Length: 433
Image (cartoon, rainbow, N blue to C red; front, side):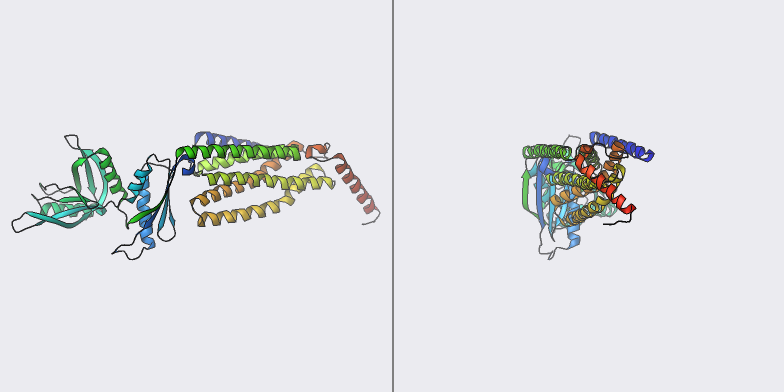
């Protein structure tokens, strides 16, 4: 009994911790609940890129992840689909058009050296070999007149290139191109060492910020074209979330009513275990954290049904043991032991499927698989540990004096006891059926 009490208080403490986590930590919501954009990009071949390789896709994914993060939106996701497509989900974004344009930009920064004619005049520019690939970072700044400018910090290799370029063309202009368009043609006054440079021009704050964000995110290793885009409005997302909450609460209440009506006191205990289960699972969702989507909510609600199913198996086994004439303590233990194999096998089958869905499915399927797997694992703990502990504390040991507490009739138990006594009497005289 001492161990049972210790386990009871451990369950209480775990429940309190779960409640604290739920109240303190926010849970990230997917774009189908808060609105946002789902964009599919496809890598494009060019005259110089005959085939899209996995290394190219890895580089494209990394560059797009940097760009998405630069938007300042949390809980975004970039996932490869097939050989040359990427799925990008951006929840809770206020300007989907900006995201689409931002993701599709090539972000090619080039410094071009002047081509001089016989009279030492500039007649054009060819590439100098210095580009955005040589940058450490870019920042927004202002000049003494308060105009916006872009500060560049080159890496060691870029600093060396920039110093050599400015040394060679003192008194001449160097053209700075961004995505094929000239944005500045400053005249070199002196050799610039230290790897620092500035781009001045008639920039608005939005233009300067966009260029800086693109430069810091890096150029796309291969061109990418947006081939599909779906936008979910925040109103639709809020409505979906409201309906999901209502459906989940209504389902849980219906299950609780059924458990009490059919199993009486054990059903009440199962409901307590179900509440504890829901609190623990939701706390884990917030700790991981799991980005909750409609599919994820569906997985969570389905796992609630499986948690109840485990209790049903246990209670039916326990009722069979009571009908056969066993004492209450023995019947409860035997009911749990006999039901465990069935519970374990069914739950493991579900977890295996969840693992397959998570690794091979799309982002929506991943959310469903993850929430269902977490729910199934925790349901085994609450069904086997929490329910069993509460059952022993509630009923103790001895005979079942009130069969109605288990949803049984007096005649069910009495007939069982009579049959047991008859078998014992026969065995006493060596008579076996």
